[in-house]
Every structure is written in C-alpha cells, then in structure tokens.
Length: 81
Image (cartoon, rainbow, N blue to C red):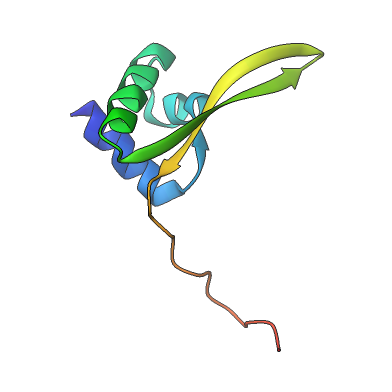
C-alpha cells in the first residue's frame, strides 16, 4: 500500500526528493527508497542521484518524478506572443 501512496504523492506533487516524500508521508527514508526502487524498476517513475551540499557537507539524495506525466498548466494569464 505504501508504494501506491508514494506514487500518487509523486504524481500529485511533481518532482520531489526522497527526503521530502519521507517527511510529508511520515515514512522512514529507507522505506521510501525501497519503494522508489520498485517504482523505477516498473518504469512508473524516473529517478536520478543528486549530491546537495548542506553546510559544506555532501548529502546524497534521490530526485524523482512520474514517467511521461506532464502536470496541467498553471491557471492564469499566458504570456503574449
């Protein structure tokens, strides 16, 4: 059930880090990473490893988004051509 929840959350929110998913869904980071690996294996999401620096220290995170999914355009005025 958790893998389906994670996939729905990614589809709803767009591009997310594994730490953001864990925090928002109140899951452990290991559980999120296992689910992301399963979803990536099934080609439902696209993931990449990212190195971010916090206070000069490198932190490895996973950035992911739904495969082939384009979120709807934001409402409002569109730029003139």
